[in-house]
Amino acid sequence: MRRTAALIMAGATALTAVPGVVAVPGAAAAASEERSGSAGPEGLTWGPCPEEIDTPDLECSTLTVPVDYREPGGTTIEVHVSRLPSENPAKRRGVLLTNPGGPGGPGLEYPAQLAAGLPEQVLDSYDLIGMDPRGVGRSAPVTCDLTDEQRARGAFPQYAHTSADVREEATFARTIAEQCATSSTGWMLPHLTTANTARDMDRLRAALAEQKVSYLGASYGTYLGATYTTMFPERSDRVVLDSNLGAGGYDYDAMRGFARGMADRFPDFAEFAAARPEYGLGTTEAEVTAKFFELAARLDDTPVEGIDGTIFRGMTFELLYVDALLPLLAEMWQALDENSPLPDPPPSPSGDMENLMSARLAVTCADSRWPDSVRDYRRNVAVDRLKYPMLGGSTANVSPCAFWPDERPEQPVAIGDDGPSNVLMVQNERDPATPLAGALELRKAFGSRATMVTADQGGHGVYPFGANTCSNEATTEYLTTGRMPAQDMACAAEPDERVTGQ
Image (cartoon, rainbow, N blue to C red; front, side, top):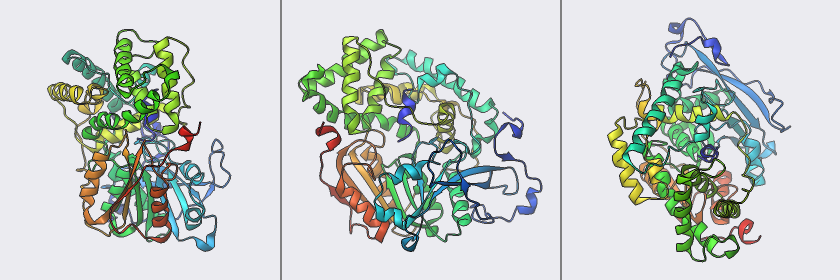
């Protein structure tokens, strides 16, 4: 979801249609291989990364993994991986697997992006390992053949004001699901699960010749890390989960949770805008909040420059991710209110947006069952629209997951407390994308395995780029020494100078 913020704005077939897919005969010969994916991978050969990745110190390789771990000798794909070696090999203690979020977010360049903010002692301690997860980026990318119009709709359903709006969205969602299932990569859909990506990670661990791996994952990456350390508890070393999904991952509850997250976070923006009358959005938090509903209703009726009410709600949600974007959000509102030219939006994420959106759908819909009755969505929309009026009419609405193919090779992994106490959770109290309520649910599921550090901050993402030094220092201490706080810890608010110092 750290990567999915940008998404808001914005069948059998021949195997040769999918880059990196190889059909391997003789599946029975390998039937004894462990289903976990830990057995058999060869070492990695590191070399230059693709030329569009302009990071000289980053090395790249590929790892061959089975599409279906129940048939380890069958069809395989190549997962693309990267490595940023320790800056001080004498102090290196192992590898740190990373994931930037999503699902659907490519991670090949993520080690270099992290390195720009990680403390020197962390960069000395680990080789940073990145990966484009299966179905994403260069790793056998999936497609739903999304049109420009479908991509423009973004990650959120239309805001439903009535039952008729829910029925209309169901038609749109069904079309997307059918496109995904009948696309050239539709045959892969049952295997694009978080559990299989975790198995790929364990294959990567073995290929790196490591007995254990440490992990740093953000947003959806917290569910991936939670899944890995649940499936392979004795193979995970120091696990840091930053901005946490609930124990069910990116399921329908998490989608509905965006509305709660926006309600948690919005007062920070209302306070910011009210203190700056030059934006003309109100001089009290109540007036700024009223301006939100005024603009949303106006744009529902008459879109401006392609921005309707749903896109306005999603744009506001997106720009709440980072304190430094609050001035841009205020400028956007001001321009829409005054019908003046819009400021330039933040840059779109790199990579193939169609693949990013398709892979997000593939993983979220394969990981869990979503309601398949339009009646259920009508009821939930009615509830959430009243409870969380800013976004609830959208996030409770029908998703393509409601019409996803029924085949599910396995049940989702149940996160639990069986394993070592090696999970550090870090969390902002007012996170729009992964609300505190979900983090507390995951914390409860982990039991004695986890310790949680919460920061009295708003926004999505804590480590290493967040403003709260207390939570950052606790995370660095754990990654470099293995020492966690003795118990769950709350960090006091700290001002973000990127906003207050302007």
